[in-house]
Length: 304
Image 1: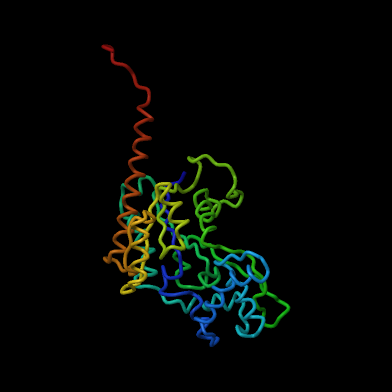
Image 2: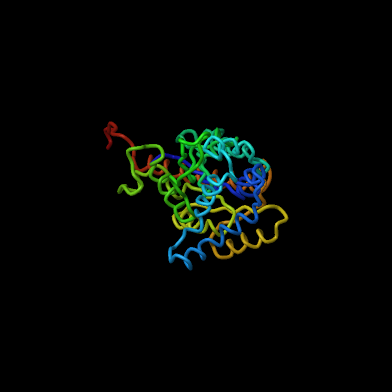
């Protein structure tokens, strides 16, 4: 096991105020409210009309493909999704928070003695390519998100098929992949048996940060295994405040804060202090290992 502290972030309404698709709706002149209302009605509609179950977290991908084919999202392809990444508006303190947290351990000699480091990951039900095109991509160590295949017989290419999905439950799979190091070692598989001591990142060395009830599976997994869960809400949004307070009351999260990651503000302070607490625990464990190793053989005194 490596001495890695993993900070794992949701994206929409956690790092940005709103949804990553908002710039797309604005550029193409699509009514975002009407689009999401239709998407939210699809699971019940398809169950009633066709007797099929629909994943409510990822059905929106099919609607994006339909809109693209119908010309409502003309020329929407993976390169265009990356361009929308440049239009994402992040909360204050992003992307600086990624480097501030790394310095929280890199500037402490006791932590560096045991090669403790901080890594950042994004796990989102949104488009992976949008995140890849955003300004935070150079600050994170990996992302999980939804991927789309293009129809390259069209000119320009256009999104046409769903390739890979992350929903609010399968986010936990991403956490296990980080835990085992699947993202760092391609020969590994998330279902491969692996002793706890051989896993790359211990769950107790994880911090999961997200905005609300949809992330309960990930919150619960991380907390149940000794890690930390932190929720974010937009300043002044009382409905969002009530949601995160309910999560705290129900033991789903450790605490929450206003979505401002500026150094010196509560969110940054809590995250950095939690990282240092985890780092202190790693140092204690490493010193205990050294103590158990004992002293090497030595010459006995004559009196002995």
